[in-house]
Image (tube, rainbow, N blue to C red; front, side):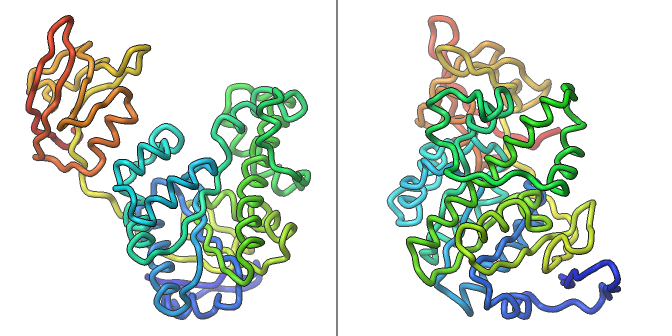
Length: 351
């Protein structure tokens, strides 16, 4: 893995002269907060994050990990997982992972398992998912009262460079009206200020502690997302570590990790389209030749349980199957009309 420092537009970088992860971690040892960004679907980015965490735990233990992936109200459930009070599936159900985040948990499992093994505290940073959606619809001024109660306590207006970067993302939306863009900016501000607020609260409660924040690179680049908003609250020194992606510019961060894309191994899947209804989750459609179709499951079958674990929603089915591989066999019970049907399914990889 090659590593290079990104300084300014007048500096050339020798991509062959990379430093080790150990050297990078040592270089950042005087920073109270280290932001390590990611593209959420890049497995190599998460492996880079894990490498940083492993080296820090080996040489500079005593830090916590802040995570965008979990909403702040799930902190007790996160604590229970780290304490060994719950297993992974109970943890995923309790935090509503597949409802609120949804990315393949296998991308994050090595990081979460490492934190649990090493008893490293985790801090759930994200605002309630419905808050940013509501701000996008109404704007902050018109928020219903119940949503105002979960807003960050302080907000600083977006600077022009921040707005310019958001405009690139906004242009992909259908509604391109000026007022829609302002609501979009406000939603991103709520997101960044909210995660900065929770990070600041942790640092304030734990004097002298350090924090490693794992979140999307868009919340970190150029420092004007979470980093500067956290520094405004605490004065904490920080550094931004990014992994390579499509766009790299000088001054985006302090360290750039270069890694080749890696793919997760194929997952074992049912091969169905799931439909959440008022009374449960049913099969909306089947992949021709897929595992479910070959086992005899039918469209409109309503899931009851998988391997004895009750499942009533698509999220619960994803939890039940998240760690399964092609060739694994699962016992599926469904409701078909007035009959209960039991079927053994050999999972397959996606076509």
